[in-house]
Amino acid sequence: MSSAPSTIPGGSAAAGKKQRIRAGRERSNWPATIVLIVCTLSVLVPLYVTTSMAFKTTGQAVDGNAFSLPSPLTFDSFVQAWTLTNFPRGFAISVFVSVTAVAGEIIVSALAAYAIVRNWDRRLFRWSFFYLLAAMFIPFPVVALPQIQLTGLAGLDNPLGVAILHIVFALAFNTMLFTAFLRSIPLELEESMRIDGAGTWQVFWKLIFPLLAPMSATVGIFAFIASWNDFMMPSLIISDPELQTIPVLQKIFQTQFSNSYNVAFASYLMAMAPAIVVYLFTQRWVMSGLTQGAVK
Amino acid sequence: MSSTTKPSPRAVVTAPAAVRAARARKSRIDPLYYFFLFPSLVIFTLAVTLPAILGFVYSFTNSVGFGDFDFIGIRNFIAVFQDEGVLSAYGFTLAFALVTVIVVNAVAFFLALGLTSRVRFRAALRTVFVIPMVISGIVIAFVFQYLFSNSLPLLGQGMGIEPLATSILANPELAWLAIVFVTAWQSIPSAMLIYIAGLLTVPAEVYEASSIDGATPWHNLRHITLPLVAGYAVINMVLGFKNYLNAYDIIVGLTDGGPGVATRSVAMSIFRGFEGGDYAYQMANAVIFFLISIVIALIQLRFTRGKGGIAA
Image (cartoon, rainbow over all chains, first blue to last red; front, top):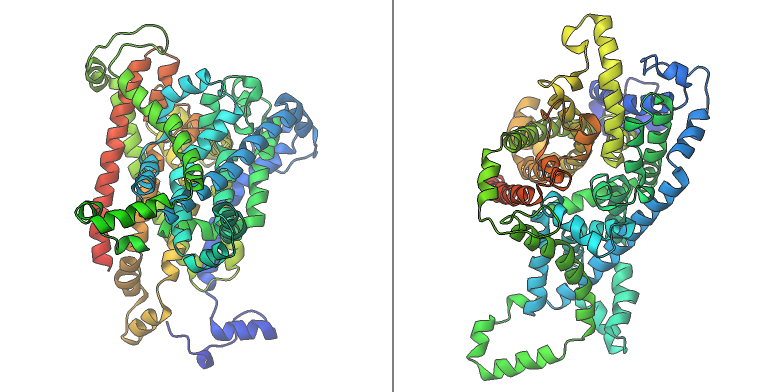
């Protein structure tokens, strides 16, 4: 495909000045654009159904037509979902698990990665690195049964235990990300700070940790998405149903209130919304983070 | 890093001066580094290593999860291999993982191809395509469960398509397709982003040069794009396969393993060990599952090295 600027007409649409400049550089591929727009329906239709169902009355929701617009529009289902799932409590617990997982994953992995990178010539640190990496090959289901037992014995069959397990299972990947990033930070920066009398503690918190910020943002966002959305761990580890996280609470619409579709979808929508909102505000890091993780 | 120039520890032993130097360096370590490292070692050991060892030991016993138990050798393992329920869970999980990996990579690659071509609204399109990644698996599975069991049959009846007229989730032959669909729906974005990163590393000059030589778009795809993103495809397949082997949330939301046990995954069968009292038995199952995951990972790593050689 040639892209010589002079031979390309100014695009098919009305040619504003800005558009002509852009069209000069690259002609838009409209067929591909249209195909992709049609493809977005596969993402948007389920979200549309969730939203429109949530605003329907129970009477309209049971007619089985998921694609109709709500008429009349009502907020009742949100009120009911709010009380049925005890949303404020579930929300607080989910926030607690997510915040603990985010802070824990960033701090624990960054500290370990820093210690490992700066002491790579010491056997203990080098072996620790490979020991932690081994976790990548141990999926949760393999160790789940003894874990359920042990968390019960340790009094951690609660949201805190779930947050700790999130930190542990992300440890290998996060430590790998942080070590890769730390190796690219020149030692000279740190040495000049040490000559000025700073100890390891200050060097880490005042110099290294701020430099790690972009990587911490990535680790933090993925920690949030994973822990906010997870069903497997909380459903198995948290023994008290009163302390369950938001995704697990959604199960009541399968067992008890199975005909209140509008209430169920209102509840689903409230469960999805926080992660979608966080994503929309942080998508730069979500996208760059994923590729960094994969390539390194 | 200095580690590349440092003599190996074995060599150091024979050289007294180097030993002293090494000792001097060792003594200079700030104890704070241990304090930095130990939290991760401690929680990892308590939360993964200890349960893994316990599980391994339990797999040779007749424990029901509490109380007394005896060691019964490898009887659990033999029983697992004769248990049709477990074997069908392995069959389902492996087949599901394989099909999903193929579907996800094919769709993700073409979406990435589209999003890196000269399309309009590129940023907005990408934003939309990534959304499924950030939605809870169980919640979206509940949404699709409604669509598959209520809306799709209505549509099928309306259009007179016989196989769609009843819920595919209630059909033991077809329910797995719904699980592949929803899993793919959720996993395509991450694979797509990795492919986009891969496609962006291909310099535009390469395509210009080939078009001067008269290459068609198909030739470009076949002989330039595909070989250059092969490494990214391997990353996607390794990461994806590992996730799909542990499939749980979406299956719980869609079919809960049913109809019957048609879509019960290995993870689901292991977790049943806590309800059914066959604790030690399911630990043996977990050990086997672990070994299978390791073998698959090693095969994939081998494959990666081979592919890397071709791509380079």
